[in-house]
Length: 426
Image (cartoon, rainbow, N blue to C red):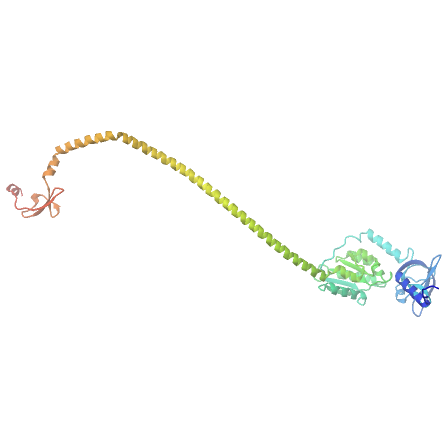
């Protein structure tokens, strides 16, 4: 006997269900429809998909069946996208179909590939416009009742609440979806270059079948995106879903939530960056101040050194000029001294002769003075003054007081009388 406890049928089926559904979350395969049944009461579709060797049961709920662009029937070749599901009570498994398209040249897949190739050849997938790093106003083109809008608003509120979000109700599913998306793109883009312009346009919705997302695969939408002047982000479905708008748009976001993470900055990251910038600024400012201080000190030292050198150079130049002037002056002085010396020497050589001649002249002068008749008069006569003025005897009267002056001696006298000869002359 084995030591392992045997499982019950229910337990085994439960383990099989858990394993298969976790492993085959999404399957993508093709085959031929057989045993097709439309359940009229519920609207669900039941059928098998087979090839030459095997078959597998499939079903599609009414919600997905309403998006089909063709009427399934036995013998039709189709492509299915779905998930594996196990019905534990019977141990049966089947594929729950999310999308169902015709295979072959007329299928949606073929249309998708043909349109993608044509648009790529026309250059619709190049020349991407950059997104602004800090958008102020964003237009959200999606269903106002869809979960995608709420997801985008929720993520935006946690990242950057300075951006204004404007939601424009847009059909994102059904036959009219493509035209409605294109018109709303053109409407929002018409504000480009005005005060009411939008920085970014987002077109998006949640996941779904290929039929559900087909509006974003239509050429009219691709034309509207390509002709728009406003940057456009395509955020359609899940990460594995690719639509034509993803390739034409300037940026493709894997999901609506991820779209907000792509186009909006993270305020927490920017707060950290601001802190780092402030720290770097403070550090740079301190380093710049220290560098400037060192430079000032160095320049001051150079200035002082140059100032000393200039002062010494100027003083040396002045000394040189003064020395040249002194030499010139001394030369002139020596020249003048030499002239004076020569003159004095000549004078000293002639001095004995001059003295001899002077003595001879003095001897002659004495002889002349002794023979001078005027000297004899000066030595025997005196000048008469009356009342301090020169006078003659003829002009005076008896008893007049007079003064006699010979130039050295002054004598006073009175006239007593005149001789008879003098009186007769008066």
